[in-house]
View 1 (tube, helix red, strand yellow):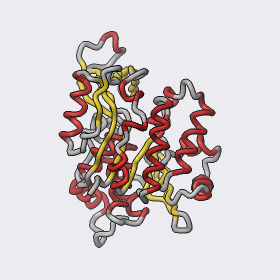
View 2: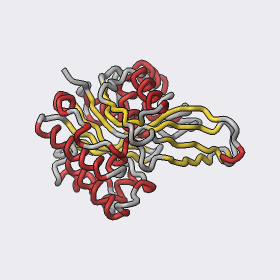
View 3: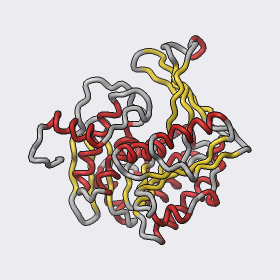
Length: 325
């Protein structure tokens, strides 16, 4: 039996400033790590599912650190390759002043950008229940793009459900330009079974902020399910030929760190679908995961266990007969 969810993409080492102000005045950093796909894999692992993450890291100490940490969270890292030809990517998080976080990337030409279709393990993808991808990987390099289309092809041939989160990164659009990036990300979205953009991403991709209109455009391409996140307000969900609706977000008193919340949300939706929940119930569960993630610093530190999510929902809503809606 394969993993419940297989994913691949770049994870980087994060050096987080230990004090506020411009980086030139910062003396100490906390070492963390983050990457959209590994965040989702860890989120799923914490929720009780088997997840597998493929990637390339540098043959360096940071690469060893990433494998050790992600494996330690229960994710299968057996198909992560150490690459001699380029370093592990990294990024720094600067706290200019309260509420003003800035991120500086050192990822151009990183080991992960050399990931290609030969690095995919066809057997693992074909045995999975879900293949989860993000638009970040598509913008890293031509070889990464080819690997994504190849992975989708393998998944489709083996009736593996394909999940796609556009996860736009304008700083990565370099060689493609905005129009080229939009074209690639739309092509990937149209090949998926589930697409989970933010409302701003959906508008950038399809030229409309009408959620049902976005969903209908995706359904015409063969997409089966659509979830559109609208920040801390609500999430819209729709199924081809089925129900649609809005699930309100949980109100959070203080947002400590919003980075990684979308990955936690994605893990929550996929967890719900693996458990055969309706799409609406999966989104409700995911909203609770996202709320818990923004209440903690770091990308993965706040990813909750199943019990923590259920306790949070009960605390917020009371036990309405055990129905998660």
